[in-house]
Image (cartoon, rainbow, N blue to C red; front, side, top):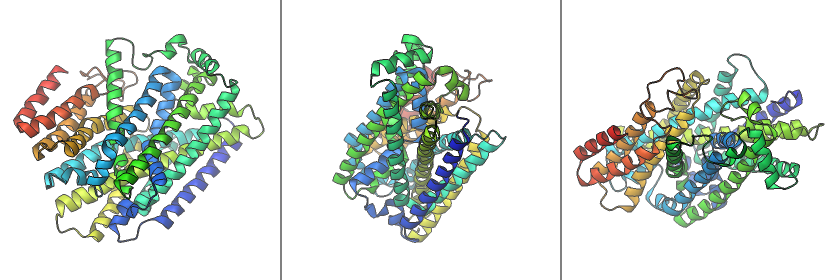
Length: 524
C-alpha cells in the first residue's frame, strides 16, 4: 500500500466529487414521484449504446473486477479461465435470452415467469429466489467496499471498515431510491467510462514497462507468483487432483449459466425500447465486457509480476487489493505526481464500480418486493401505482439497512461463499426457469415452482455443508468443520437438479421431484 499522503488525499477528493456528481445526476434524471413505469424502466428511453453500457455496468461488478484480478494475480491460468467464463455467460444471455426477455417481460423477472403461469405462488417464489440471489451478492459488495475504502484511505482505526460500509450503503440507498432505472443507469455509464479509462491507462503503462512484449510479462509473472510454470497451468486455485478438477468445472458451470441470469442483469433487458434495440444493446455490453476482461487479465498478470505473491497476500489473502498495489508500483516510475494520480484514478474507478454495483442490485431486489410480492401477492388487483412505488422506495430502504447491518457484522470474514451462492442460485434456479418458460410449451406451474424452489433449496443445502463454509483455512468458518459436500460451489450438482426438477414437476408432479431431490442429495 502506498504511504503517500497526497495519494490518499487525492483519492478522498476524488471519492467526494464522484459521489456528489452521481447523486446530483440521480436527482436530476430520476423518475417522476408517482410514475411507476418511469421508475422501473425509465420509459425505455435509453439508446442502445447507453443501455448496453448500463448492462455491462451491472454485469461487471466490483467483486468481479477485484476478485478476478486477484485470482489471476495469485493463480494465473485459473483466473484467466474465470474471465473467459464471465464473458461467455453474457454472450449466452445475448444470444439466447435477451430478446425473449424483453418481449415477455414488463418490469421484473416475475413478469416473465408469470406471463404463461399467473398466480400468487409464482410471484412469491420468484421474489424469494430474486432475494436469495441478490442479498448475498449485495453483502459481498458492501463488505468489499468497506475493505477497499479503508485500504485506499489508509485508515486502520477499529470500526473504520464498518463506518465505510455505512457510508457506501447510505449512498446506495439514495441512488436507487431517487434515481430508479434511469438514474442508476447513468451511474453505471459513468462507472464504465471511468473503469475503462483507468484500466486502459494501467494496461498501457504495464505493457510499456515490459517493452510491449507479452512473453516478458508472463515470465515476470511466473517468477513473481512464486509458482513457476504452474502459474500457467490449471490447479493453483482449486488443486490438481480429481476433486480440484471437479471444483474447477463446477465453478465454470455456475459462472457461465449464473452470472448473466442474476436479477439485476436481466432487469436491464426491460430498459430497451424494443427487442431489436435490446439486441444492439447486448452487442455493446458484450464488447465492453470483453475489453474490460482483457484489461483485467493484463492487470492481474502484471500484479503478479510487479508486486509479487507475498506482498499481495500480506495485504489481502484473496488478492482483492492487487490492482491498487499495482497502481502504486507503477506510480513510482513517475515520482512527482505519478503515484498519487494513478492511485486516485484507479481508486476512483473502483469506488464508482462499488457504488454502481450495490445500487443496481438493491434496485432489482426492491423492485421484485414491490411488484411481485406487494402488488402480485399481498395486494393483488388492488395495488395502485402510487402505493407500489412507495413500497418500492421503502423496500430499498429496508433492504439497504438490512444489508448494511449484516455486512458490518461479517466484515472480517471471507465472503467468497456468498458470491458462489448468488451465481449458483442464478444457474440452478433462475436459468432453468427462464429457459423452460421461454422455450418449452409443456412447462407447467408445478414445474416452474419445482425449478425455483428445488434449485434454490439444493444450492442452499449443499453450500451450507460445503468446504466454502467450513473445513478449510479460507472457509467462512475456518475453525469449524461440519462439511460433507466436498466442493466449494454446487453448480455441478444443483444445475442438473434445477433442470430435472422443472421437467419432473411438469411431467409428473411434486412427488417425483421430491424423490429426485433426495436421490441427488444422497448421491452427493
